[in-house]
Image 1 (spheres, rainbow, N blue to C red):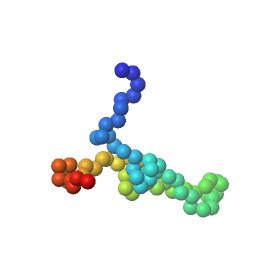
Image 2 (image 1 turned 90 degrees about the vertical axis):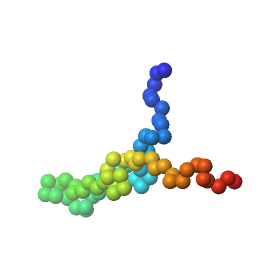
Image 3 (image 1 turned 30 degrees about the vertical axis):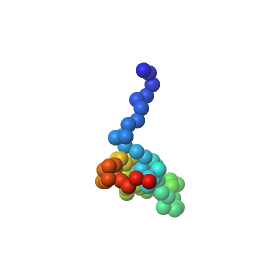
Image 4 (image 1 turned 135 degrees about the vertical axis):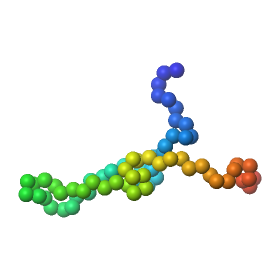
Length: 68
């Protein structure tokens, strides 16, 4: 079979807090003496700048869930 490997349930997922955009540059306003824009790089606090989160399994087993 050719092509990429299909994703499984154990693979990391996109971070819901930053939607995968884990690092951004924020302008501080103004320019330095060389006319460069002053910026600061910030990272998502939830995923620590990786853009992905691990899959969390439910604590309740499927057999104990209430049937509809």
